Length: 162
Image (cartoon, rainbow, N blue to C red; front, side):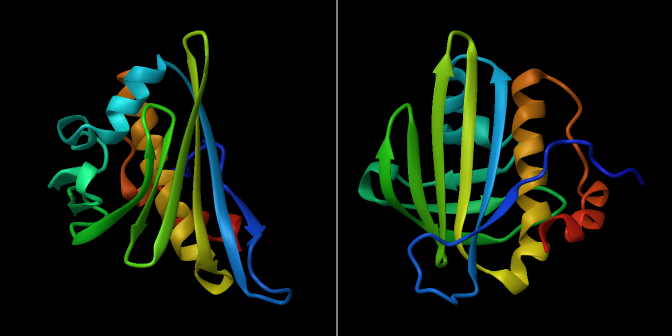
């Protein structure tokens, strides 16, 4: 088993919580040589999403979808509330109280993905952080046509997020 060499996320104090709060934000950034449209599609099209994360049913314009994870790490199904969606530059969703924000920025053919998981209890950052690194690495691999990472390469990253 090898440890991934991708850039890990950053653990930051939560910006809108009272002083002394134990909540943090997990922040990640990826830059891929793909158009903004290609990256948006990989993140939002149910068939494209299936290649690296999961599938969903429902119509996001109603504000709700039903997401099913489809890989070796997770196979849960849950309701997702679409808080905000601004195609093709970003969205915010709430998954069982997990506030997830995605923002896309393009310069030429390079698109930067900024992903944040907000309001994470600091005690859970080590458990949650490697999972998002795994999924973002899968997104990048899908976009670039390279080998998808396997979950067993990621649990050893726990200390990176503590």
